[in-house]
Length: 246
Image (tube, rainbow, N blue to C red; front, top):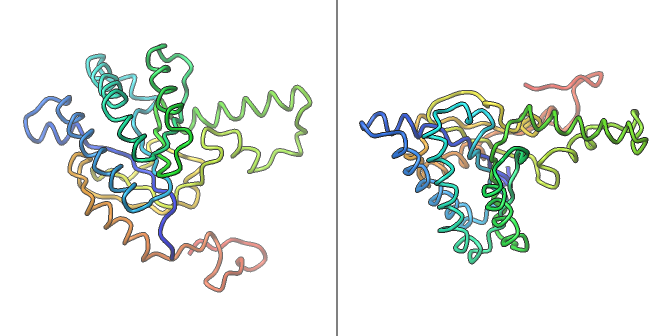
């Protein structure tokens, strides 16, 4: 198997990392930012093409306001402190998620990150901010319905490709590998459509403890697997057109 083209990460466990050390949750988020720097730099160094990070979910707004304010403050620090460095490293930043309802200053930060780096040809860094997989599918469905309503698209013309091109991730390949830290074994509303044939790697390490060595371990595990995309080992579809997932 060839190296993964696109790796997505659910960065989980900042709060548990802090709690285990008797620290406030804000300290965990700060440590998580340091881990983010290391992993992004490592991904760029090993020539990974696409890296997607689940930075802030649409469900995170239900957290205490003080924690939300801290997370948004870290976003501002990231753009102000790290954006130029990423730009110099030829990293291209793309933001996915729902921007409706976000404050003007946050939208401006997201736009700034994308605009500055849009021509870069190195690592394509996708940041999922105010993102939820179900919300993304709902927004895509509404966009397709509008095209049908306005007679720009026939009902029979709706295909998987049409839906894919209506998602936030249009022009982004589906992830080959999804990593989740901190021992949880679920997607948590992340890339629900795109993860149809992704490989999964779960680690007990919290996100602040997630090292470049653990990242490489995940890649090595991925390379040991046999990805058949529903086909048999000989490359043929299962009998009578029934897909085999064994």
